[in-house]
Image (cartoon, rainbow, N blue to C red; front, top):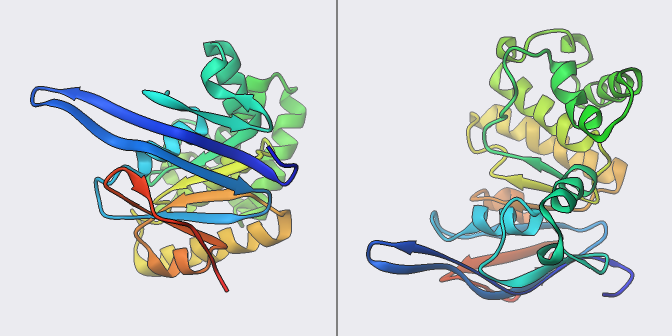
Length: 231
């Protein structure tokens, strides 16, 4: 793996057993993500975009093939090592914020750091810093269930970034929001990408979003079309 490459997938395959036989979702695909890139995976619903992100992030295991971060293969990791990888190396934003509604915004954001073993004081400080980054400083002590949809997604973004991940994964991060809120979240993500030199990969139907990425892949029939760099 070259020094500027953070993530590599080789021969990635994912299949599921169904009553009608084997359903192949991903069929031996390869990809490479470089540091600082913002990449998008586009394709029709059901093409396997979410499945691909889960495999790349280490949230699921492939049927065959391998995923590698800085020379370390996920398929050779134990369950504990994989959990540590997810906590230390990746951030993930889903279409739904998936916040704990009975916790405050600060408590939700600091949780990954507490899991890592950071002190409550440091975790709280970092949570406040990232809530400020996403424009939610004044909502830090509000319960997650009291936040609007857009505010919840901003808190989810802060939670994904508070650990300083190598790669940020975003699975249709604006897919559950209205157009105006989606635009605000998109602008926030773009701004954070520039100011914090993030590396990210997005699954999206939003062609405007994809068009602003450095690299775009189309996923169809289990394979990725040749990536292109935006001009």
